[in-house]
Each structure stands twice: as C-alpha cells, then as structure tokens.
Image (cartoon, rainbow, N blue to C red; front, side, top):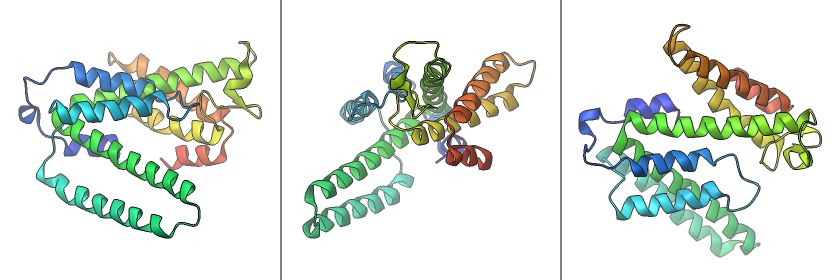
Length: 226
C-alpha cells in the first residue's frame, strides 16, 4: 500500500489517543532509518521491527479497527495453508525458510497497519523520513565508492555497480524508488517557496542518482512507471 493510501485510511487526529507517548513512534522511525543496512540476515531493521511489534502489542501502542478483520482473517488462512504445505515439502529446510519469510512479511503488515491506525498522519511522515534517511545514506556511501573516493569500496559495489549496504544492485535500486516518489510529492506540496522545498529537491536528486548508478534496468523501469 502506498503512503497516500495509508494516509487516507488513517483515522483523523481526533481519533488518535492523545495520551500515547511519542517515544514509540520515534523508535519506529529510527528502525526505518536502519532499513538500508541489510548485508546480514536478520538485518538490524528486521530485529528492530520484530521487537517493536511485540512491544507495541504488549504495551498497547498499536491500534486495529474493524476494517482490519478481513485482511487479518485472510492472512491467517494463508499462513494455515502455508503450514499445511510443509507436510509435503521435498526440501523441508528451504520450505521453512520460505514460510518464515511469509510470516515476517505478514508481521510487518500488522506493525505498519497498527502504527498508522494509532498515530495517523504523523506515523506516515516519521516512517517515510526514516526511509529517506536510510536511502540517502546508502546512496552517499555507494556513490563515493563508485567514484573511488573511499577505501574498501568493494563492499558497497556489486560488479562495479552501486549497491550500498545491500547484497545486490537489483535490490538497492528499487529500494530508492519510494524515496524518490516521496521527495517528489514533497516538492509538489511545498512549491518552490516552501520551507521543505530545498530538502525535498536534495532527496529527489540523491535518490535519482542512486537509481541511475545501480545500472538496474528493472529499477529504471520501476522508477519510470511509478
């Protein structure tokens, strides 16, 4: 679901609990800011998201509404079918890995749905700012490595293509597309005289450069279509 769709689905500010502390929201933004460091599995982002989900449920920081019931029911049915398929797996280890990724993705959806329902528009803004920070960091490091301006740059390049702290340029490139769209939306909203225009322009340029230096045709097409 895109950020605008999340914003449209979020409750009005009056529906958000005013007593809810801001710390949890900013920790969520901090987790998003680590999203471009994925050389290891599980990545820091994965661990942080899992901890935030558990803490959010236990401390009642996440909110769910009646509109979430059907998606949750359908996803539970999918997990049940997934578990049933394990009984006939020819390679159980690989099948378990596949199922674990499915479970993680569904848990991620629960976290983001509950967070945006609890905090409304603020959650979308904080999450996307963290995302933009992570992407900008990846682009700056990989661009410096691409032009040979930092040592030990092989870690940031894949076959001479920028990949940041990802394992593959074909993952790094598409990761930057939502960041580019977010920055473009900020430019449209603020206008040339807006306070956030310079920052939006900088993030837009950084993400476009990162997508280009990934030399991923899929990322280029993804960005163009988006």
